[in-house]
Image 1 (spheres, rainbow, N blue to C red):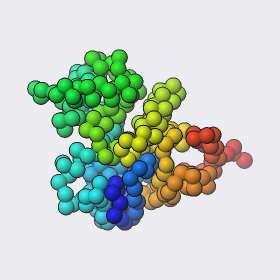
Image 2 (spheres, rainbow, N blue to C red):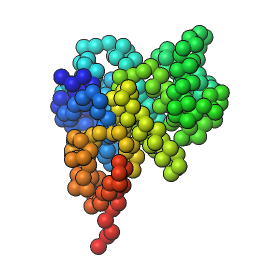
Image 3 (tube, rainbow, N blue to C red):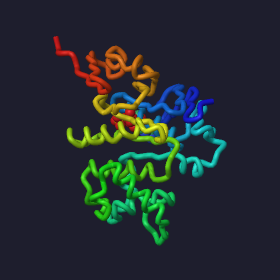
Image 4 (cartoon, protein in one colour):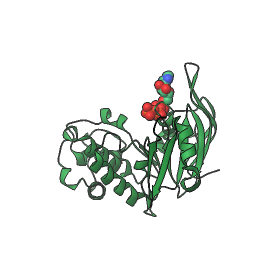
Length: 263
Ligand SMILES: Nc1ncnc2c1ncn2[C@@H]1O[C@H](COP(=O)(O)OP(=O)(O)OP(=O)(O)O)[C@@H](O)[C@H]1O
């Protein structure tokens, strides 16, 4: 069994409709995966299974060596970092950026009379610095721009020193500069040998940072391709996944894709 993630024939069915459909996927230690697929393909559903927030309707899922259904998910969740826009609503707007990151160390979303250890505060400050947020530590979370919020959430997800880091569309809504800044920071993280295993959901190959190693492509809940970027991220697979003819270009360790002209 894989140490990081092992899904065997996993389906998640809602209202008689499979959101993910007989998915088998395994992640080995040291791999950094990108999940690509069109709107509604099942990417977030897949990430929610990996984050232990969703249980398969059928099939088996093991995360960090623990089989879902026979493990205390609260203990397991402490070993997983999740950064997703769905967190925005759960985090108090009036809390400072530093508190927003610190509360993660206590498995909470809000600052409530905990006395933080100095070591936790130093760690939170170091993570915020790594994500380019040092000038914002005292700002209220609710006043941040989209890009600043996203970077805060990634620092927050790293606070517990997770073994698995899950990022749901971290670059969505960012402008070109914000995206490139984030790709650089994610690239530094992905290439750090002490960084956790990573899975990033995205819609765009341009957002794949250097250091990512594998891709899973999903369409209508089914896996279209899964494996090393070098062999699986091809124009053919991408075109099948998104349902239109696409060209794909690789320049160094970055990617770009374009639709073919009509006619
Ligand atoms: N509770 C639910 N009941 C019924 N259908 C659902 C439920 N939750 C999600 N879906 C549907 O399942 C499909 C997959 O959703 P999911 O959010 O996983 O897709 P996604 O690939 O992350 O999409 P996007 O790129 O648009 O964020 C969508 O068609 C969605 O409408």
